[in-house]
Image (tube, rainbow, N blue to C red; front, side, top):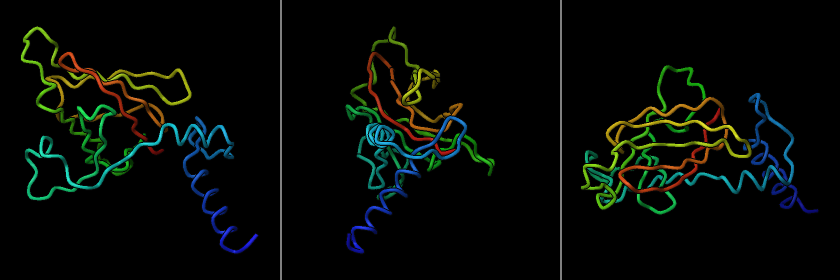
Length: 167
Protein backbone atom coordinates (compact mmCIF):
# COMPACT_ATOMS: atom_id res chain seq x y z
CA UNK A 1 0.00 0.00 0.00
CA UNK A 2 1.46 3.34 -1.05
CA UNK A 3 1.64 6.50 1.07
CA UNK A 4 -1.30 8.04 -0.79
CA UNK A 5 -3.46 4.94 -0.15
CA UNK A 6 -2.60 4.97 3.59
CA UNK A 7 -3.48 8.66 3.76
CA UNK A 8 -6.87 8.05 2.12
CA UNK A 9 -7.63 5.16 4.51
CA UNK A 10 -6.65 7.29 7.53
CA UNK A 11 -8.78 10.21 6.32
CA UNK A 12 -11.77 7.89 5.80
CA UNK A 13 -11.45 6.49 9.33
CA UNK A 14 -11.26 10.01 10.80
CA UNK A 15 -14.40 11.03 8.89
CA UNK A 16 -16.30 7.92 9.97
CA UNK A 17 -15.31 8.28 13.61
CA UNK A 18 -16.32 11.95 13.56
CA UNK A 19 -19.76 11.09 12.20
CA UNK A 20 -20.51 8.09 14.43
CA UNK A 21 -21.74 8.59 17.97
CA UNK A 22 -23.30 6.43 20.63
CA UNK A 23 -26.44 7.47 22.49
CA UNK A 24 -24.31 8.66 25.41
CA UNK A 25 -22.56 11.15 23.13
CA UNK A 26 -19.19 9.37 23.01
CA UNK A 27 -17.54 8.05 19.90
CA UNK A 28 -18.09 4.49 18.83
CA UNK A 29 -15.93 2.33 16.62
CA UNK A 30 -17.30 2.68 13.09
CA UNK A 31 -18.89 -0.33 11.46
CA UNK A 32 -20.00 -0.71 7.87
CA UNK A 33 -23.63 -0.38 9.05
CA UNK A 34 -22.73 2.87 10.86
CA UNK A 35 -21.02 4.20 7.75
CA UNK A 36 -24.04 3.34 5.59
CA UNK A 37 -26.43 5.02 8.06
CA UNK A 38 -24.25 8.14 8.26
CA UNK A 39 -24.23 8.46 4.46
CA UNK A 40 -27.98 7.73 4.22
CA UNK A 41 -28.82 10.50 6.67
CA UNK A 42 -26.21 13.02 5.60
CA UNK A 43 -27.33 16.64 5.71
CA UNK A 44 -26.38 18.70 2.72
CA UNK A 45 -25.73 22.15 4.15
CA UNK A 46 -25.51 24.68 1.33
CA UNK A 47 -23.43 27.84 1.73
CA UNK A 48 -24.16 29.49 -1.59
CA UNK A 49 -26.73 32.18 -2.24
CA UNK A 50 -30.28 31.69 -1.04
CA UNK A 51 -32.85 31.28 -3.81
CA UNK A 52 -34.75 34.44 -4.74
CA UNK A 53 -37.92 33.15 -3.07
CA UNK A 54 -36.07 32.74 0.27
CA UNK A 55 -33.88 35.85 0.46
CA UNK A 56 -36.40 38.45 1.67
CA UNK A 57 -34.85 40.38 4.54
CA UNK A 58 -31.30 39.50 3.53
CA UNK A 59 -29.09 42.06 1.84
CA UNK A 60 -27.01 41.61 -1.27
CA UNK A 61 -25.79 38.14 -2.16
CA UNK A 62 -26.71 36.54 1.18
CA UNK A 63 -24.56 33.49 1.87
CA UNK A 64 -25.78 31.76 4.99
CA UNK A 65 -25.81 28.02 5.78
CA UNK A 66 -29.10 26.46 4.69
CA UNK A 67 -30.71 23.09 3.97
CA UNK A 68 -33.37 22.46 1.34
CA UNK A 69 -36.31 20.15 1.86
CA UNK A 70 -36.31 17.05 -0.36
CA UNK A 71 -39.03 18.55 -2.60
CA UNK A 72 -37.39 21.97 -2.60
CA UNK A 73 -40.55 23.59 -1.21
CA UNK A 74 -38.94 24.78 2.03
CA UNK A 75 -35.50 25.83 3.18
CA UNK A 76 -34.07 25.89 6.71
CA UNK A 77 -31.73 28.88 7.10
CA UNK A 78 -29.30 27.93 9.88
CA UNK A 79 -28.29 30.91 11.99
CA UNK A 80 -26.54 28.50 14.37
CA UNK A 81 -24.25 26.23 12.43
CA UNK A 82 -23.50 23.60 13.37
CA UNK A 83 -26.70 22.88 15.25
CA UNK A 84 -25.92 21.49 18.70
CA UNK A 85 -27.76 19.28 21.17
CA UNK A 86 -26.32 21.45 23.95
CA UNK A 87 -25.04 24.98 23.36
CA UNK A 88 -22.59 26.01 26.07
CA UNK A 89 -22.10 29.53 24.70
CA UNK A 90 -25.67 30.60 25.49
CA UNK A 91 -26.68 30.87 21.82
CA UNK A 92 -29.72 29.12 20.32
CA UNK A 93 -30.38 26.68 17.51
CA UNK A 94 -32.09 29.41 15.50
CA UNK A 95 -33.61 28.26 12.23
CA UNK A 96 -35.53 30.47 9.82
CA UNK A 97 -37.98 28.32 7.87
CA UNK A 98 -38.85 29.79 4.46
CA UNK A 99 -41.45 28.12 2.24
CA UNK A 100 -42.04 28.97 -1.38
CA UNK A 101 -45.00 31.31 -1.72
CA UNK A 102 -46.84 28.70 -3.80
CA UNK A 103 -46.90 26.41 -0.75
CA UNK A 104 -48.62 28.94 1.52
CA UNK A 105 -52.29 28.10 1.31
CA UNK A 106 -54.82 30.90 0.75
CA UNK A 107 -57.37 28.59 2.41
CA UNK A 108 -58.09 30.10 5.84
CA UNK A 109 -59.16 26.68 7.14
CA UNK A 110 -55.75 25.10 6.46
CA UNK A 111 -53.63 25.20 9.62
CA UNK A 112 -50.74 27.63 9.14
CA UNK A 113 -48.62 26.11 11.91
CA UNK A 114 -45.42 24.41 10.74
CA UNK A 115 -45.44 21.00 12.43
CA UNK A 116 -42.07 19.28 12.60
CA UNK A 117 -41.96 15.59 13.49
CA UNK A 118 -38.31 14.68 14.03
CA UNK A 119 -37.03 11.12 14.35
CA UNK A 120 -33.50 10.30 15.47
CA UNK A 121 -31.96 8.19 12.72
CA UNK A 122 -31.78 4.50 13.56
CA UNK A 123 -34.08 4.78 16.60
CA UNK A 124 -37.74 5.14 17.48
CA UNK A 125 -37.02 8.41 19.34
CA UNK A 126 -39.44 11.01 17.96
CA UNK A 127 -40.19 14.58 19.01
CA UNK A 128 -42.66 17.10 17.66
CA UNK A 129 -41.98 20.81 17.42
CA UNK A 130 -44.34 23.52 16.16
CA UNK A 131 -43.69 26.93 14.66
CA UNK A 132 -46.82 29.01 15.26
CA UNK A 133 -47.99 30.95 12.23
CA UNK A 134 -46.24 28.64 9.79
CA UNK A 135 -42.73 28.78 8.37
CA UNK A 136 -40.73 31.56 10.02
CA UNK A 137 -38.17 32.08 12.79
CA UNK A 138 -37.78 29.34 15.38
CA UNK A 139 -35.54 27.76 17.97
CA UNK A 140 -35.49 24.01 17.33
CA UNK A 141 -33.81 21.91 20.00
CA UNK A 142 -33.70 18.12 20.18
CA UNK A 143 -33.04 15.85 23.17
CA UNK A 144 -30.05 14.02 21.70
CA UNK A 145 -27.18 14.58 19.28
CA UNK A 146 -27.32 12.77 15.95
CA UNK A 147 -28.98 12.87 12.59
CA UNK A 148 -32.65 13.80 12.77
CA UNK A 149 -35.09 13.09 9.95
CA UNK A 150 -37.68 15.87 9.84
CA UNK A 151 -41.18 15.50 8.42
CA UNK A 152 -42.49 19.03 7.83
CA UNK A 153 -46.20 19.92 7.45
CA UNK A 154 -47.66 23.40 6.86
CA UNK A 155 -50.67 24.88 5.06
CA UNK A 156 -51.62 21.53 3.50
CA UNK A 157 -48.06 20.91 2.21
CA UNK A 158 -45.32 18.49 3.24
CA UNK A 159 -41.60 18.11 2.79
CA UNK A 160 -38.74 16.29 4.52
CA UNK A 161 -35.12 16.99 5.37
CA UNK A 162 -32.30 15.75 7.56
CA UNK A 163 -30.57 17.94 10.14
CA UNK A 164 -27.53 16.89 12.14
CA UNK A 165 -27.16 18.06 15.73
CA UNK A 166 -23.66 17.84 17.20
CA UNK A 167 -23.14 16.95 20.88
